[in-house]
Length: 145
Length: 69
Image (cartoon, rainbow over all chains, first blue to last red; front, side, top):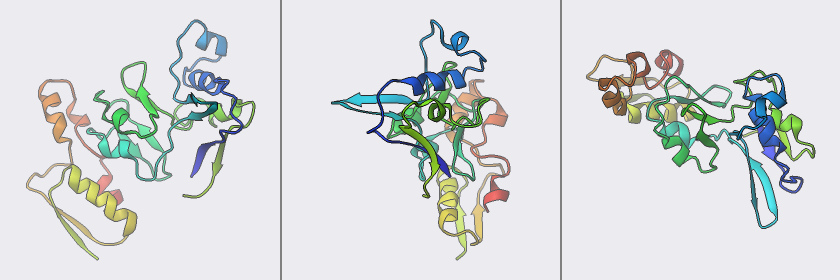
């Protein structure tokens, strides 16, 4: 499946991916209305330490610990390998948040967990973080398993 | 190879999913005392407390057995 990959050498830690993510998942048409005066809660986060930086979002693991640990079956992996959240079934136990080795699942605005679903769950057709990255530090491509 | 699994909860479902990663054709039989679709045991207390609807008790989609086994 096509996945999001990062190239930390090219990441400038501009955090634009975070803003594009928050906008893509806001259901607003205008980025200003979507983000102005709001504390954003994006599904992708830039990690920075000792001069190295890169953005982290769900890896859609081959053996996803989040899906294994989910006590309700709210997290599932489809045939393409994409892991998605069934918002109706999540009971906010946050076992998935604790079990994800990448810290790629977080509490959403409505207490239900949220994770990157490659923009398949919003109006965008392609991941907005990738589209908006000014330095091509995030790419969306097929690299095999 | 064919498989018989005793029980129909998280471990059994995990086993089915694990088997299917390696063996797409082997026959899998699940034996369970309860005649229910697989459901989440930890959610029983939530259900009794009225926090979860009965339809959300199921641990995998309705077509899980058909699709997987």
